[in-house]
Length: 462
View 1 (cartoon, rainbow, N blue to C red):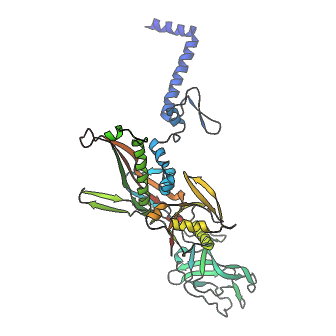
View 2 (cartoon, rainbow, N blue to C red; view 1 turned 30 degrees about the vertical axis):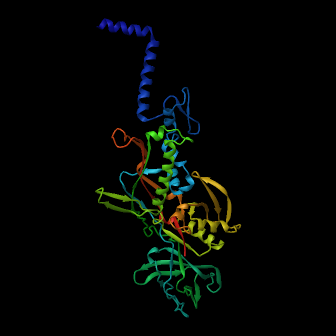
C-alpha cells in the first residue's frame, strides 16, 4: 500500500499540470456551490458598468430573464387586465399599476400616521391694557380651541395682527410673533410677544388680539443653555378594511363553440367582456362600498364587503352651483396644502363636475395642458402654483347618481391588498355531469385603503 502511494506521488511530481488542473476544478465547484446558495448571478449573466445586467455566451431565455430582471416578465393575466378599457376603471387601474401587497387574511389591518395640526383659533378676545407697571411681566395667557398643539418654546404667528419695530412704537410690516413659555390646562397658553409694543417704559407688551384670530404654529426657539426640548411622538393609528371576494363566471356550450359564426367570437372574447364587467363592479365597490360582514342564512356563511375609499378620504371640498376660476384655485389649494402629500394628484369626477371644469377660462395662474398618459390612462393636465391635477371623467359617479361629485386621489398613498390575486380557473362541468359547457371562473379577493387619508379629498356640491 505504501509502495503504491509513493508511486502516485512520484507520478504527480512528474505531471504537475494534473495537480493544477485538479485544483482549478475543485475551486470552480466550490465557487459555483456557494454562488448558488447566495443567489448571485450565473456565468451567463454578467454585471454592467452602471449596475445593469447582461447576458453573455448563451441565448436569452425566460429563466435568465427572471434571474437578471425578475420584474420584467409580467403575469399574463395581469397584463391582460390592465389593457382592458382602462379609462373606464381608473381607480382599479391605478391600484394595479402601483402593485398590490399580499394580505394573509381577508381582514386587513394597517397603520396610518397623521401630521400634527399647525393652526388654532383664539377663542377669547385679548385687550391690551392702557398702562403697565414698571418691571411687570409681559407674559399673558391666551385661550385657543387647540391649546394641545402648542408646547413650550414654540413660536406662533398671529395672522392678520401686525407687530412693531424694535422701538416698540412704530408699526411693523411683519405680523405679530409670540413665544410660548408654558401651557396650563386652566389658564391656557402662556405667551410673550417677540415684536410687541411699548407701553410706558415696558417693552414687548402684547397688543390687542380679537377672538377668531388664527394662530399658526411655527418652529421652536431654544436658549443657549437648553439641552432638552418638549417631547414629540407621532403614534400611528390602526385602521381596518375587509377584502371582498369578487367572482365572474363565463360559460360556453360545446355546440356554441363548434357552430360556424359570421365573426370570430370565441371564449377569449367572452373572457375579455367578463373582465371588463367585473372591473366595473369592483370599481364601484372600491369607491362606495361599505365595510361590513353579513351572515347569509342560505349559504350558512359570512359574506365580507370591502369599504370604499370615498368614505376613507380625510377632507371634503364643497363648491357652489357653478364652478368658477376662483373656486378652482381654492380647490387646488385645498388639494395640495396642509396634508404633506405629493404635488401630482388625480381628480376623477362625474360628467357635471368635469363639464364645469372644461368650461373654465384658464389663466396664467391655472393652466390647462394637452392630454398626458399616465398609468395607461389619458388624462387632461391642469397646473397651478400649488401642484398638478390629472383630470378624468369617471362614469362610475354618473351611474351612482353623483355626477356633480368627484375625488382627488394621491396615487402615492393608494394601496391595494390582495388576499387572492386575480386568477382564472377552468371548471370541468362536463366530467361532473352538470352541463356540457366550457366554464371559466375569474376570482380576486382584495381591498383598497388610503394610507394617508388627509392626502385625498372628496369634492361635493353645496
